[in-house]
Image 1 (cartoon, rainbow, N blue to C red):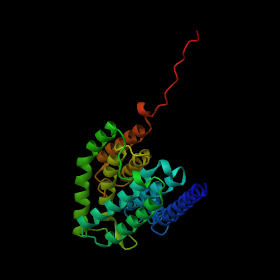
Image 2 (cartoon, rainbow, N blue to C red):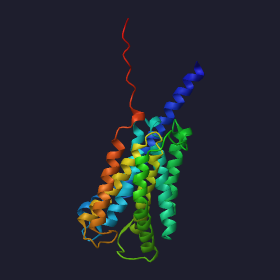
Image 3 (cartoon, rainbow, N blue to C red):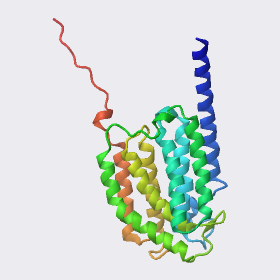
Image 4 (cartoon, helix red, strand yellow):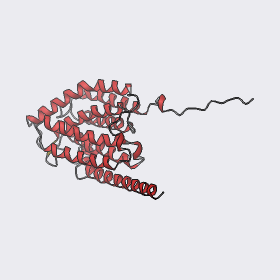
Length: 271
């Protein structure tokens, strides 16, 4: 009896620490890592009208949308949302791959920091044993959406990494000493990986699906608000297609699944 009580209190303490780490990391991403500032500037150019809005929106989409959404999702029923921890790990992976592809090695330190936060969250999570366990059935619609996005996303990753390797202008698209070309590559990779993660149907799978739709939509809107030839933009036609994809992904995340519907008891006539 005493041992059960201690286990219960220990579990409660871990969940409390889990939420505290998630809040601190989310606030840091939104503030000292300029998640909010660059996201706002990506839509309005209000903070710095001379900067490139698309490149700022890319940074804001990663650190003002995707990373904080995954972290803050853990504040409510974290035991049902292991996908939020997986999403944080995916952010670290995308930053590391983009940093290596663009030969922007300082991004590896940022990726390591995000991965470290993910590791702490996993250690504190009450259902950490399910981290690498997929759901019972993959989501076919999400797999189709991922297949549609795969080609354009990987081409964009290559283009942005190439721009970073060649150190193309604008030279002032920098946050915390990191140029935004690399984060644009990470963003494209993230959108693809998050939809694939959602397709695995781990608990809380809608979190990465919604995050991917918001991130892709943020990039598309910033491109539509900026000149078609702006750095980081692929033109207005592509922006409209990406926006349509983002809307479809968001709608798919909320579409009812037959295996999630509660069974209705069958009425048995009384004799």
